[in-house]
Image 1 (tube, rainbow, N blue to C red):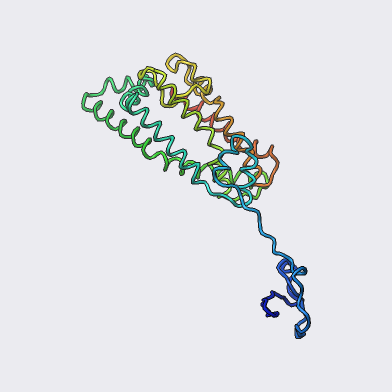
Image 2 (cartoon, one colour):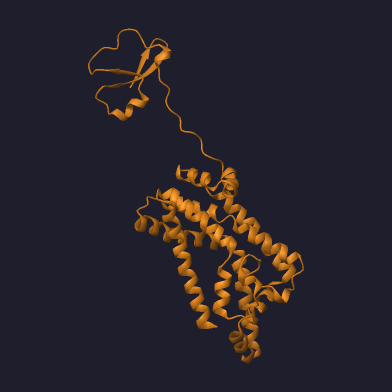
Length: 292
């Protein structure tokens, strides 16, 4: 209720109002009583508490590399915007695409992938020329399409992984996370992967041979990058490629952020995240063993 008091307007409430309104009270009175009398002095008026502003997106991006818990605590407070890291991913991703397109060639990328799969290479060699040409064209279009539509794949992939992690941390560990918070944590926690992309660009400009370029493992951040995929057991190569320092860094951040926004122990966040990672590694190694 607003009440005029001289030249001022005061906010009052009946005494029967709930206690949580008291933070906004200036005057209290009994129902039916008069407000006659002297008004409260300025020194008696209590200011309304104003919540502290959150971090900017630029600060959250910077803190991921210096003080990641500050970024995740800010997300927990409700500041879930993620368009800046997404924009950075898109820009760096298209720069990488341009470098691969101009320095390696998309057809060479496709040919390299076929060459690393002897069974597929032999099957194509036995096919009629028209079928080989059509297969090569389709593979080229798919590869280029994946690069061009990478932002959509990024959003879709993070959404699916966020759903899986949300269910795990909430139902498996008693967390109270929301989808938007987990999605935002994913977007920021994945920022170290930009280092891998930048390293890949550096490797290409350093003079790597187009015939040896592997689009699935283009940067020396894992054990598989130092193995020859043609001479190494496929299952072993898959396992070695999974031991990626950037991936592990990302997972540590993801576990930390998930625990913070869900309100659970750090160990619970790490178990949830690295548990899913172990499952994906087992599946990948199993597929490689079967197909290799």
